[in-house]
Image (cartoon, rainbow, N blue to C red; front, top):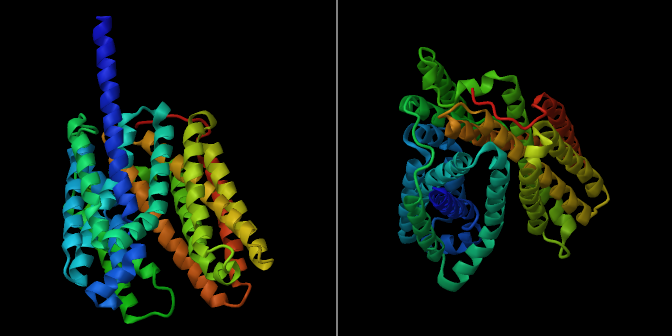
Length: 457
């Protein structure tokens, strides 16, 4: 009997490791493809022509990543995390092959849109799968590990893309996905299914479509600061119409909602929502504004790319450190520490800019990234530990959706303020405003539970 138990435990551990390896490989692909093409854009534009379309090679990938999160989470709760993750990997591999074979810029952009949609599902489901694999005691550490994989992959993307482009041509960037993706899919097929369907989870496709239209309109609208144009009027009209139709759709039956309404009915989760929006807005606004003001200062001594990379590396370090200590320190302490680090980084930046201290500016961005690692890991694990049984994927996707929305709002709001202020001190003012917003997030974090706990209602 004892030998049978030991053998079963060893098999379970082996299956768990296999599933984790498949998740890491899948997330690596999704993260790398968000940045790997950036250094090859000139080669692609030179070969395929229509250079005016080449920015959409990046935007066509990144926008669907933000849009599909609610749909991916709902489908995973209905069909099972493993099943939907396999489907996303298959679509991603097919889209990669289409991108590698694309004879024109429009077809390449279409393939990138399909890549982005499947990558958005992979990202959400990777975090959901690890949450299903491990109990609450180890969940923080594993989610921190996954965020580290994400950060390092995104940072390595431009370097890998440049190497492949120089050695084999830009099409090799997309062929590279196939062996890694097939390996991830193979391991996922061998490992036991994770996140089996709850049975009563529902996916209302009309409501999901309206949510995608709403999010797409809002994200495009807030990415266009400046005077009102006909395009903005159209986007505003589309957002208003989608909102009205969505409310009408879910009013008779709250279960149709693309985002779980129960998520927003608890005070602690509303606090987590505020932290997600503020922290992501702070990080992405910082890394968007910083290159604009640092480029004249950095010169040959330190490129703006390296400086901005400090924020990404800070995020990686913060996620790993928070994941290791979250269970002992508790939600409130770690989220508060994250918002405090974000505030410290934002308040340090004006002093660095005023005195043209480039190394101090790099340190400030590292603090911002470090704080984001703390805040992002804490809010994600808190949401997962609070999710009702059978709703883990949809609650994880809600956090991801809020993070994307906060990033878009933060970049647009601070960009608009900077343009309106102009002048040499405008950037210092923007970072001071960001710091104040992060302090507001510190106050919001006080409403999170102090102790690390699991509360599946």
